[in-house]
Length: 120
Image 1: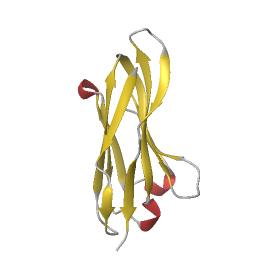
Image 2: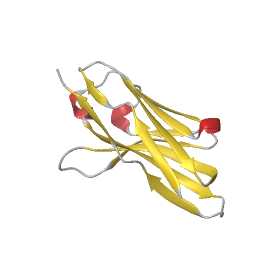
Image 3: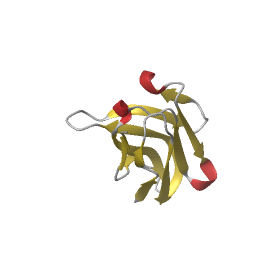
């Protein structure tokens, strides 16, 4: 079993910054990809950014140039640096990881979510 623990959400004014972290632990052989998704009230959960084991990244168009995803493979941790935040970035942010376990099966795991609120 694998657990994802997120941290770093909160309330910030427009134009401000936050850094989210997500640490994976458990029966991990290799993490294939990690990413962040977000879900605003009444809306579906959408992709924000992903990063694969080789370091290639992918971003949703509205966050390009403002958000940066990175990972520390030694710590099994993914980060999301969010700059120039806007009210429309308000959502619950979820960490996702595609993990190959020590039993060599690959499963997608989700964190519990962390609230990000951008408001003056």
